[in-house]
Structures are given as C-alpha cells and as structure tokens.
Amino acid sequence: MQLNLKNPLVFFDVETTGLDIAVDRIIEISLLKVMPGGAEEQKTFRVNPVIPISPSATAVHGITNADLAACPKFHEIAQTLANFMEGCDIVGYNSIKFDIPILAEEFLRADIKFDFRKRKLIDVQNIFHKMEQRTLSAAYKFYCDKELKDAHQAAADTYATYEILQSQLDRYATLENDVAKLSEFSAKIRTLDYAGRIALNEKDEAVINFGKYKGKLALEVLERDPGYYSWVMAGDFSLDTKRVFTELRLQSKTKNTLF
Image 1 (tube, rainbow, N blue to C red):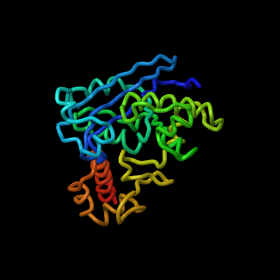
Image 2 (cartoon, rainbow, N blue to C red):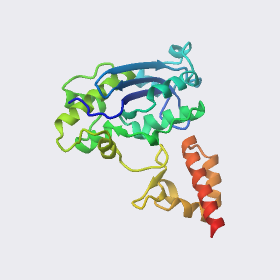
Image 3 (cartoon, rainbow, N blue to C red):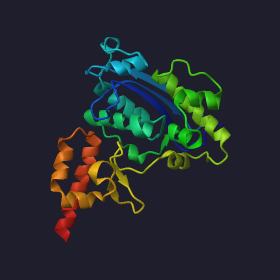
Image 4 (cartoon, helix red, strand yellow):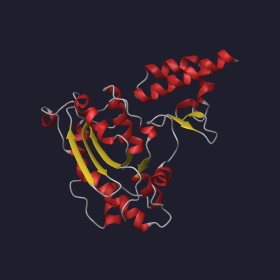
C-alpha cells in the first residue's frame, strides 16, 4: 500500500558503538526520505565515533574502529542530517526507545537544534509487537515473505522497515493510513524525554518513570527531595533527560515562588 502522506517521511536506522544512549555513539546512519508523491531519496553515512566500539556491538554489525578511521565525525555531518530531516515525520524500528534518543544525544553534542517532539514518530516495532510480537528479520519474513539479507547494516534495515510499514497497512484494516494515527498507535507511553525517564500521566502531568520514585509526580519529588535533582545531574543519564529535569526544576521553583 502506498503511504498516505501530508509531509515527507524519513525512515532511518543507526548502528552504534553500544547500547548506552548516554555514552555510546553512532557509527552508521541510513535515511530514506519518502515524499508525498512517492519519490524516494536515500543517504547513508559512516561516522568516526572517536570512542571504542564494544566487541559485542561489532559482533552484531561487523563494523570496527579501523573501518571508520577515515570517516567524518558526527558533528561534521550533523547539520546535513538535520537539513535532510527538516519538515519530515520520522519512522524507525525500535526508534522511539533507542534510535531517536541516541540521535538526539548526538545532535545535542553537536549543538544542533532538532526537536523530534515536533514530529510525528512512528515505531514499526511497536506496531509489530502489538500485532504479532516478533523481531525485524521475523517481521520482514512475516509481512513481506522475504529473507532479510545484510541484517544489521543500516541501509538494509532501513529499506526493510519501509517495506514492513507498507505491508502492515495492507494487512491490518484497523490501521489508518495516516501518519498522526500511526504515530499514536505505535507509541507505548507518552514521555517528555527520549529515554523515557519522565512520562506523562492521563492528566498530562510529568511523572518519574524509574527508580524509587517511579509513578510519583516529578514536581512533587523535586520539591520534597532537593538532592534528587543533583543526583540526576551527576548521574549517567542522557543530556536530554537532564535538560528535561532542569526544566521541571525551574517549574518547581516558580511554583514555590508564586505560592
């Protein structure tokens, strides 16, 4: 099924040095832009991460630091990526939990302002798991009846994700061919930060989503336990999560000043 688009849609996938959003770096990123008329444009970049690639990551994607020695660093391609994605809605596989958060961190380090929260975000994995409960290679076989060759290479995974979404729309009559509806359906929880440390409850209030204060209102936690903010700032949390906590802390201080 051809996608019903109002805005360009960018499908993307990353390979990384590891799985820690706050610490690890992107080493390969592939993007496929699909225009409302169906035209496609694809870009793939390999990136010198400056830090070592973990052996477990290399075992998955097969990329070593030696392979990337002559490649540009992320800050050298960051603006090109932001320009390519400007005005587009975003699609990925496990992207809401991993790819978008780690790309957001890279943009922050490169001092590039790119707010994913202003985009419609579709996570094909979440649609898949809600409908069938499987993995990318299995999803590709299930929906497209094809074997995924070159799995864990960003370009192959990106095109597979594109084909899977089209097939999902063909298969499920309950899925609306509308980016906003797909974004809403593929979201697991609503969060303020990309890593999902701060969620929104049914009243749109910020709620801590981890640790001893899980389920507690963030503003109340910051008011009652001032040391908690310092602990977060000193901890191994993503830059984006720390930024959101800082905004909440400022809200808490303003509230206490007014009342």
